[in-house]
Length: 170
Image (cartoon, rainbow, N blue to C red; front, top):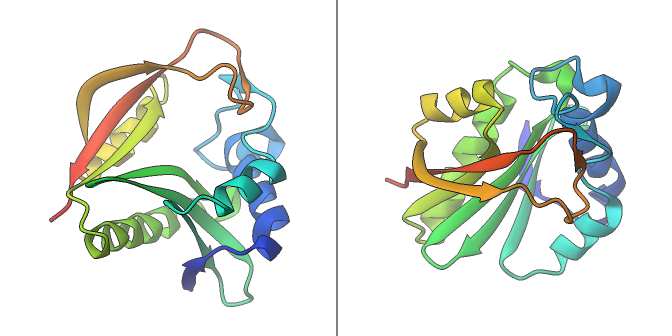
């Protein structure tokens, strides 16, 4: 397995991977589906292209031995904090440590960039995902945020909010 920054040539494959991890029929093959909470897609190609243009944003991909992208993570430097988002793993390889490998790489990235804390936001109804992050050292900050309903990342089927979580980088 190899981890590296994404490039423009990865955008289509990455868009498909992220959407399959969170929404649609394929997402039901894994445990990270949000399809019961949101309609629509999680991301589109234009959004990924725009992320590539931001100097404080890095998106990493994890590829398997056949060079297929099996996981990805979005990292954004925000001063001494690193925001981690869109940790996505192909549904058919979930529960095979891919997410953990990407999370470890994100922690290394944070250290290399002198970040003291990694922050994430998780939909509060995603208890199993919150528990997964807690087992990896994240704690709830006590901050809640409204779900961004006009961000073109899906339409909530019910009122949603985001739980902010943090992990101190050691």
